[in-house]
Image (cartoon, rainbow, N blue to C red; front, side, top):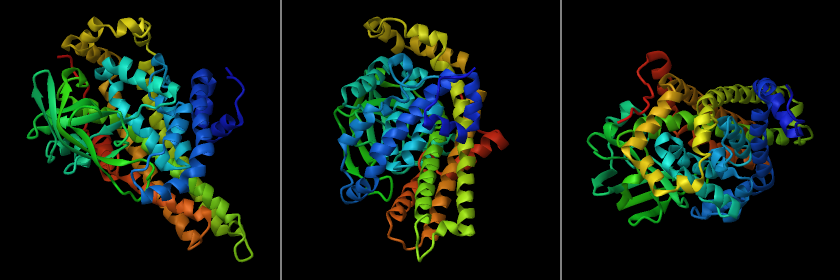
Length: 486
């Protein structure tokens, strides 16, 4: 079965990704939807990200707190902040949500990884709300993201897990059990008081909402790690510092301070103590693949600018006429294609889980109810109650297996460390070949070199991602456990 006639962009992308070309024969409507999202990201990258990449990088070296609201509004016109919001709420996340996101992020990051990360930070912040425990906030926070885009006033989110004394430690159960946790959530009447700091939080300075992980007992962080929804207008919340960064400068890395921030009971995402499986591992299983796409996008940007540089005459001849340069270009292209395959393996495996959930008849029936009813006090009280949370947990366990989620985490970690290490190697090699050239192409490659380094660090260092892959695939000591009804 053939789909509608493709654009030139769609035809090129299918040529570069034969697996999608084959899949389109089976599901033209679903694949074409993903291609349209990727094409929107490509157009945004061409018209907005690439022309301003070097300018914003230099500007934010001088002023790390600068925030370009016009650029954010431009991204909203393309609906880039609702790529993770389910279509039942008016967002773009449908059957192939992870595939569309990976393709789209790669396009934007091929122009500027800082701009790509600034956009992706909202998607990452929203991810915990996509778990069953976050469902009570679909008609409020996720709806607000969609409506904000339509008004041209984007609603941004951030995901806050890293602490000054615990970075990679909080992303793996064996390490979290021994981590030095500084932040604590203390139960009080009607909710919790959050005290402590989070650091290096992408998009944290401008985010209206944050999903925050904290232990309710710092001596037992693994057993008490819990996810909270925090609004920036809550009393006691502040952003004391924005880091001066080497790369990806367009996306702020902020320090967040919580001083007796009261978070009501209904802002606990899922169950208390379920933060590791649902607030970390399930999120990493979805998000590490797209981080690999960030790396692949950066590598594409390197190759594009290296090609442009090599085609210009220098000393009376073009570098691209030399066979050694031609072989280097072939090696770069091969590495990019290999890693794109790993990313698509992860994305399509994830879409089998998450995409199927979003188009499940039960989910469609639930959101076929009038929104006024879904916002009513009895309905919301049920969702926030232990009976509502138990029903959500049962639904998740009915539709998703722990084996599939664990396998997805392994694929995500593999795609992440392989792709970002590849991009670091390509950027380094290109700079060596270009030498001390003062062309715009070399300045863009040098920016890619600075941008790519952090991709080997965030979403778990690449060393941790290697261990995660090994523990799942070869040792069998790591498993994603879904919440059980309580």
